[in-house]
Length: 128
Image 1 (tube, rainbow, N blue to C red):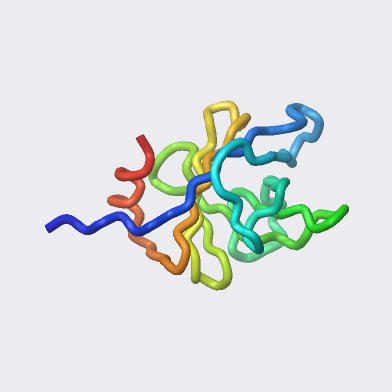
Image 2 (tube, one colour; image 1 turned 30 degrees about the horizontal axis):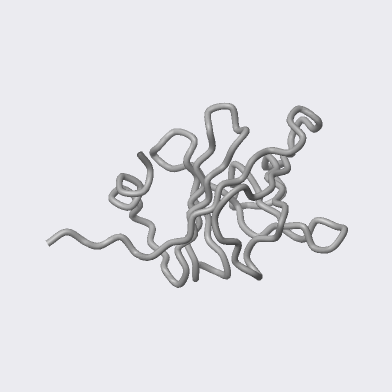
């Protein structure tokens, strides 16, 4: 019997200021349900600048009032092109982000209270 895909929330983000910054992109949600405490109305995805030993490809921050908060998670490469994984709250929630080829849109898949390192089957089911 095949394993069932865990419940997840999906949200699509669109870049709001393309080309304005070299290493940072700002996105706003277009569709999907925003989860309070996890995503805000704007997210910031910046390139890793080698300040952490974990060396993710990108960092995700949320807007907190008028300022950008601390990074929520780092995004790490997966076996699939333009798909990155991260975790929230010390591996309590799994976050998968699928970028378009030009990085103008991002689709976020959040798996609350679920985390795994084996993403092969999960990615084949949610990313078409």
